[in-house]
Structure formats: C-alpha cells, structure tokens
Amino acid sequence: RSRRSPARCSPPCAAASRTEGPPPPRTPALSSCAPLLRCPRGAVHHWQTRLYVRGCLPAARSGKVKALAHITGGGLLENLPRVLPAEAAAQVDAAAWTPPAVFGWLAGVTKAGSTEMLRTFNCGVGMVLVCSAEHADEVLAMLAAAGEPAACRIGCLTARADGAPQVDVRGTDAWGWA
Image 1: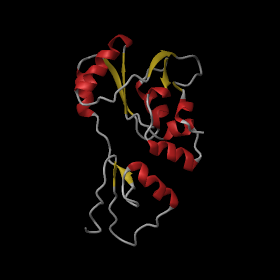
Image 2: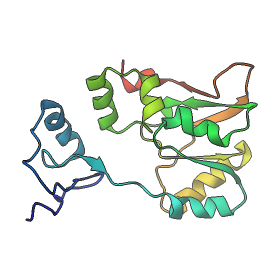
Image 3: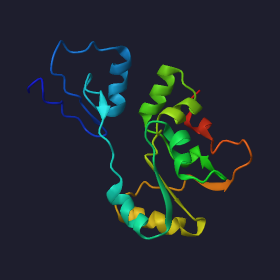
Image 4: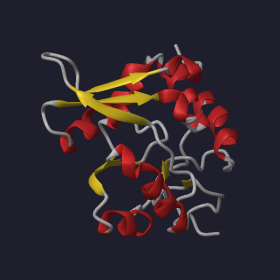
C-alpha cells in the first residue's frame, strides 16, 4: 500500500492520508479510541461526512417539514436556533438517542461537560427536521422509507420565555458523562 493511499477501515471513520514526514506518534488517547471506531490504530484522523439529502428530500418536499437544521460544528445548541423563530424554544430529550461511543470517550478525555459537548459536537444527531406534532409520525415514516431508519423524535417546540435559551437539552445524565 502506498503512503498516499488511506488505510481501509469500516465506517464511520476514514483515514487521512499523510504525504510527508514520519508517521505520527501513537498517543494513548488515539490508540484507546481506535477500538471504539473499529479502525486500525493510527488510522483515526477524521470521519467521512454523512449526507442527508436523499433521506430528507422526500419529507422536505412533502410540505410537512417546516425547517431542517444540519448539526455540524456548534452542535445542537448553536445550529438548531438558526432555524427557529426567536419566540420558539426547543426542548430536547437526550434520552431519545444514544450518542456514538466516541463522544463519551471525547467527553472523558477532555473533561468537557455535556453542555460543552452539545455546543461543540453533534453528539450523534446529524440533522434535525422540525414539523408539527400532528405530522411527526408521518415524517418519521417518510424518513424510514427513504433510508433513514434511525430517525426518531427527540423533542418538541414550546414558547420561549424572555431571556431563556432557545435550546434546552434535558436528560444528558443518561449518557453517563460528567
């Protein structure tokens, strides 16, 4: 295998190719993370971006989805407010999904609390679709039919009180992080 070709490993990770210099040192943190991701040691440098267009397009075209928020850098706490009106607040139930193990590892290694993790990473939620409660089951069925079977209801919208945060994530203690 050429030094320029990435190592083969199973999703959700991909190896970054290095074109010059000696291989990076194997730190305990990187080595301990590799088994969580099912990749060879030293191959964990970045993940491939998950694309949601095909899975979300039928639901978006149905007219039943009011907004979509791609949860990237800034996490739920910074990305979800971008699609909400100022007077709306999202109450999110963290017990509705289980973040991939790498986020627990990151929280432990960095000593970041749940709030900081939710402000920095997607913690396993890559896309949020906002719809009325009456259409939620139908939208979930459309997502499943379009290849997104892991989609689930994670919360609801309420009226936002003056000065209150726009996103309130509850139940993060279920994740077992500090």
